[in-house]
Length: 271
Image 1 (cartoon, rainbow, N blue to C red):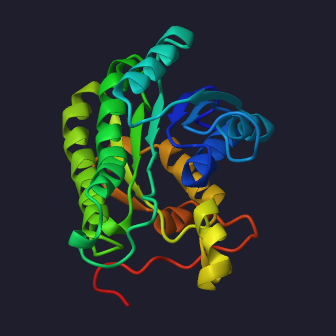
Image 2: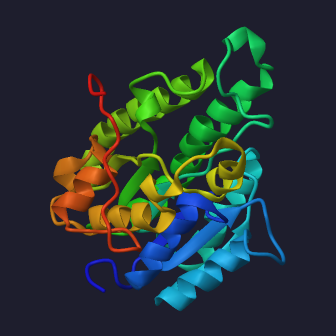
């Protein structure tokens, strides 16, 4: 445990996937972590299960059932943090809604318009709403306060669908502009670019697709790079930038759970 011990973090969309990995990694660093998601109750893919995993890792997990498509629920979430803690050190905007069925391939005219609301409404607008409500609590936190927005290389090159790319590119730009406005307040805002990650959704799909999961980053690996980024001494100097998981892993000498560092993700112009 280091610079993050005792900090209060909020990780949205943390009942599974990358959000769960980041929440657990922050728990390893001794953080109190509010974990949100729509799935509550029994089972492994719930906010309660993630909160328990945060506790097992060494932190304190606080589960909150929240639909980030509902502004009122986001407001109530931040109000709960305000009443219980009075400030917020770290806001990790990760929540995302995968359309059902997923919009993989085809033209935008082939997809129902509601897919825009899933991929941009939840993957972009909900992040703005959470940041808007959380900003005063971040201002109360003091040095090291930050917003981490989990995006994707799809913000730079075509991935899956037009609406997916629009949401990710919008989030990248939103973060850059937020960083400029937050700088006088001493709050950093950075983008995290994971590569291909073995989330539960991908693992469930692997049986049909034949995907080799051994070449993917695990959610906990992504989480540990996020924690290292949020704990680094020059976080404010990185504010407004895109931070790639594989670069952070090399910089901070991090490996995946099996002791191996996964391969990097192809960048623009690379094959």
